[in-house]
Amino acid sequence: MSILGKMLSPVKNPGGDEAEMSFLDHFDVLRKHLFRSALWILVFGIFIFTQKTFVFDTLILGPTKPDFITYRTFCSIADFLCFKPAPLEIFTRELAEQLTIHLKVSFFLGFICAFPMVLREVWLFVKPGLYQKEQKATRWVVEICSLLFLSGVLFGYFIIAPFSISFLASYNVSELVKSSATLASIVDSMTMFTISTGLVFELPLAIYFLAKLGLVGPQFLRTYRRHAIVLITIVAAVITPPDVTSMVLVTLPLVLLYEVSILVAARVFPKESVAS
Image (tube, rainbow, N blue to C red; front, side, top):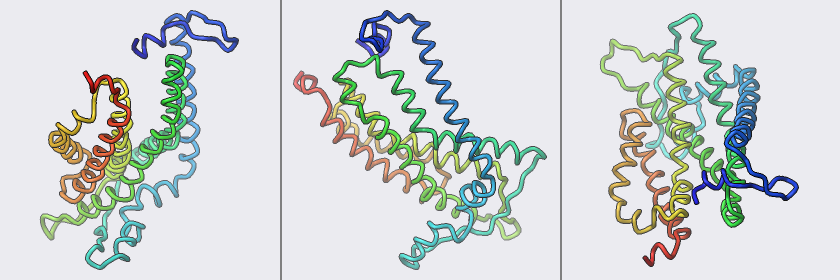
């Protein structure tokens, strides 16, 4: 039986008796979980909105500064690894642009901070539709998924963003052209570097569920490893600027995650599927 089918089947109420839940009952439960998820994002978003100076001067614009921790770390390791961004003039084009971007940044950072809570609400909605064995097998799904997502966000912020911004800010087609960027373009780039990478880092967990359902096995992943690497490279090229360094920085950990996914699939893939 599918998860959806099990969710629409009779479930036990807190008293232990079985109660038939209609589609409207499930919809009402879903609405409550969505409301709490939105509330978590709103709470974090409002707090982040009040921290304007720190959010923009330290977080958003941090990778555009030569003293950012990534630049200092690489320079302290070896001289040939040392790199820094070129001076960049940041401006806005419209009167209300700064307020609009402030609200946008507050929402996205609120989503990132509230991600574990939002994921927990999703899990609480799905959990009653699972068998006891399935609940036990996935009891750490919220923690693992949150860890993978936040790891991807941090990787995108501290690794991809500095390399990409340094490359793009230093790229010059003529000495007569000075580098500048709109605040909106920087925010959009930072959003792409972090949230996109965080979602891509969920690959092992996605493979876990696909393997658990018997849809994708370790042999399948090994057979199509080369195809997967090509696809990973394309994904890396999409979520990074058009420079080789950034693309390689994203491709390498994704390939590593793919190899980890093979090990995960080998561990959870149903044995009877392999035998058949």
